[in-house]
Image (cartoon, rainbow, N blue to C red; front, side, top):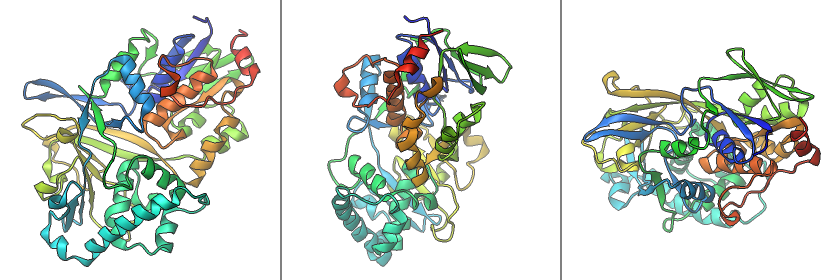
Length: 447
């Protein structure tokens, strides 16, 4: 192992994976501000019927098609997974409109949907959007064309937009519906195509981690004994001629040869003592949406009709037109998602329209998710201009689509830039390392 020291800041998937990979070759120290390692991998232990069970509150699901690196990581760690149901429902205006996409019985869970012109047009528009989306995804779409602009130009109905597409997209990205309208159309269609969301059949099988997603974190931490420090928020990263100085909130300073910032882009920028103009423009271009997650047992935050309950349940009190600034509200039915055979139903509600009853609340957590407008997409393309320069590396799910696979891919890219490969086949991990100047690596060996 090299005696060179590397600091990794942030204990989410990107930072943890970076530390885990780099520890194969370097002396690594991981700093995490929270009282646990994992970031959005946050499993809460509750008292189940037969003893403690782990309920996920952030990262919950993955599939083998779109998460090849995560699949390879779990296989290497020996982390077991199980198939899950990824059904989706919508409950709008206190249950005035409710449906789920599981089958015809749930689609027309409210039998009056058979007679609603808006609902029937929504179904026609779904088929049209799926058909046209497959055609457009192969074309060179101008980056400035947004999802909202496309829907308006092509005359899609309000029912399709407000009762189906924006609710589903907002639930996927944990983003307000009005901000989804600014999503670049090309990127949106590529994501939907890759995940089979433009198909009514043949979608990938999703999985959850047995015992909760914390299981993979536990396995990774075994490779970092006494190197992962919780309750250690970093307040400053200072570059000096001989290396990088990391200062924590307690005032302690530690010297390293290089540092990896595996946190949100804006947090990384805030830590830098003297950011360059390029660092300011790139890291400052990505905005983040705060989201409030509550683990609870209050079924009133689910659709009113039990037969339309799904794993993901979108709830809205008003249409997107009349309430454009509202945060997305989704309730995840964890018994369905994690195959929890319990007499009690467990839910995770993201930005609930009303708070669950106090006696049903188990845990409340604050998360932040990246918002993917054109500025964020442009920043991703420019990341290589600051990556590995002046002893600093940047990673995070914000460098991709905001998901676990993106966070892991960004960590793999940083590791490869520092001449570390993953302990699984290269074919399973199609990630390009960022361009690295020889001087950067030589600098890592200089002190």
